[in-house]
Image (cartoon, rainbow, N blue to C red; front, side):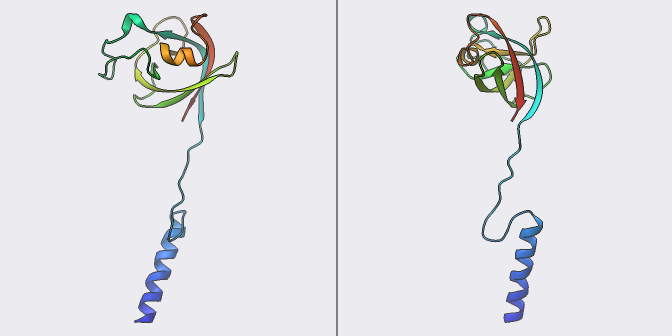
Amino acid sequence: MKLLLRTALTAALFAGTLAGGYAGGTDEVVAQPRHVASGAASYYGKRFHGRTTANGERFNMNSMTAAHRTLPFGTKVKVTNRRNGKSVVVRINDRGPFHGKRIIDLSQGAASRIGMISSGTASVSLDVL
């Protein structure tokens, strides 16, 4: 019986090391941010507040959301204003921007956090989290 228990315990410990952890605890795998793009960002607010976004939810201009042409809905993106270094994490919930060569449209709330309200646009870098 002792041999059977020892074998079972050894197998459990071995399985835990193969999975990247050890018995009695887990190691969480944390993905590193992945740089996606750099370019111009713009924002949208009152005109679209309350309208339905491309993923079906109502747009809230004060939320931390954004529109991107290709990233999947629900993707979390860290947007950094390259002029002042301020960053915000937004969730993609809409499609766009459809103006010029802009790479992302932020909600007014997110744009405010990174200091781009007065200019209307900003040079930003995007990192997928």
